[in-house]
Length: 294
Ligand SMILES: NC(=O)c1ccc[n+]([C@@H]2O[C@H](COP(=O)([O-])OP(=O)(O)OC[C@H]3O[C@@H](n4cnc5c(N)ncnc54)[C@H](OP(=O)(O)O)[C@@H]3O)[C@@H](O)[C@H]2O)c1
Image (tube, rainbow, N blue to C red; front, side, top):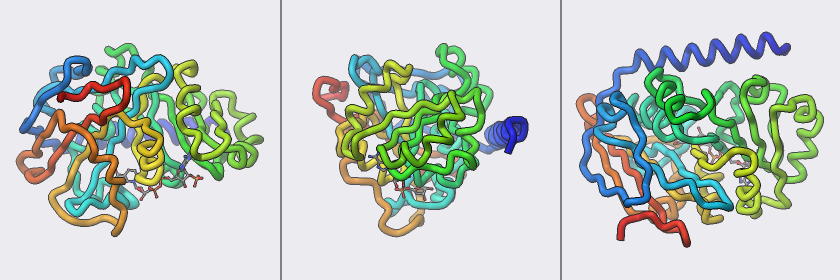
């Protein structure tokens, strides 16, 4: 596919996501608990504060060696996260457009995904609602976050939208086999950088190479297997978790229990047609970076 066709595909995708965000019926959330620690950063504008019933909190991204990293997930009432389209899990439109394609990444330098989650290839991870686009600009950030993908085996670069739009910065987190497999395709795409690990356990040294590439805050969107690797490596600060009011999803696809091992600083409830939805922001305790309340 030539560069003009990719550009047209990207514009069509961006238009579709923007229209979806603008036309969505989003009942606002209501606050049940709000206890941020003093070092947390609060972001928002008039629209997001009204929709979210207050500011959205972020852990500080000031550690010198590695980026701050959050996970954002929606789970069914019985804890499953696997679904071809996670929106089908029942988190609702407010979760999809205000949290997932919104506040969880509005201040992020990069959105990071596991290889399986992006395999379909038609997605770019950004904010689309005009209020969130404006908020991101007001925070002094580029229009689109860096697109980061983690793959050990390598991905089909020629076929995936996010690799083929030169205005998007892309970072591939991979191991030597994946790097070898993608070498030719990546060398033709100077807007894609690679961080090559010795093996899959090397996530921490890989993260330490990200600040010089401009990545100090990461929003990781899963899936659960890659999220589990980040949790095992002790690289996750915040978990933004929306729980749907009904069971569903692929069986046995619960998040690793370590994802729940944090202090709840914010809990919100869905309203109106989203009654029963629960949003929680958990802050994990990390040595030297503890921002949670005692
Ligand atoms: N509910 C939600 O919020 C949510 C969020 C995201 C995704 N999902 C759903 O979850 C499912 C996919 O999740 P999943 O757990 O099967 O897969 P995943 O976590 O998206 O991806 C797993 C892949 O990540 C790569 N990977 C794993 N560890 C790595 C490491 N240490 N370094 C570099 N790369 C690493 C490997 O890619 P390679 O195979 O390329 O080597 C691995 O196969 C889909 O159904 C998706 O729609 C749900």
